[in-house]
Length: 344
Ligand code: MN
Image (cartoon, rainbow, N blue to C red):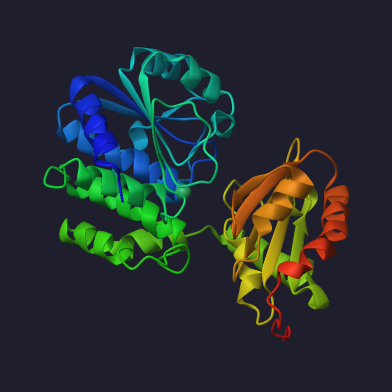
């Protein structure tokens, strides 16, 4: 599946490099952090000076990962991040394929003179890297990173820390092997990681389940009081404004996973969650059975993502965002299955 000429080139570039930076998208998730830290540990084992530089603060749910505290956060350490980027021989861009996904760090990545390698699984990559591994069929950037490590012949050098980070990326992007993992050989990858001694139970608990009490209360409130169900459209829309977020002591990450909850209801095929932020409304969308929420996010809000997991940012009020969405939805109902199940 991987092009061996490209893999050889990647390996050669690693061998030739002294200082390597790994970087990812803004609001980094388990896959972004898992894939970069996972590769960082391997590169350190190979004797390289490898550092992870991220656009902004990663979530606390990933603090258990080995190497987490050494991550260089651009919004906090602007100058140090710039120096690492400009002095790097090689920059590995993981889990994103457009420089705009890095916010203001994108310009720093772009300006760096290092060779750049993309390791990503999103659709329609931009051409800003010297070597691009872009595989939208992969479950996660972490799965792709593992495959590259194995293909380059580094599996033996991979230690438990590296395997733990890579496994976390796969587990978070697939929600513990429940989505985005149709391909059976993902379990072979899992087996190779477990062979390294990875504690999968701990990863699931820390990265997916553990949450704050206020997060649980906020989400319970949202589901009980704020989730609108459009039965004929087989869809749910949940919106939270600032005062509600404040009432439940909202911290970043507290609404993680909320958009998925409605999909557990029989007959609901797609779900939107709208959250009022400081300067915009954050839109997230999830669906089942190939309903293309990415298309709605793209057409209506100029966002994007995966077919069944997408998002956008809306400049305007929460109510305008909600209205715009609800007005647009009927146009997309043709993508529902021909005989959708009744909502019940
Ligand atoms: Mn990902």
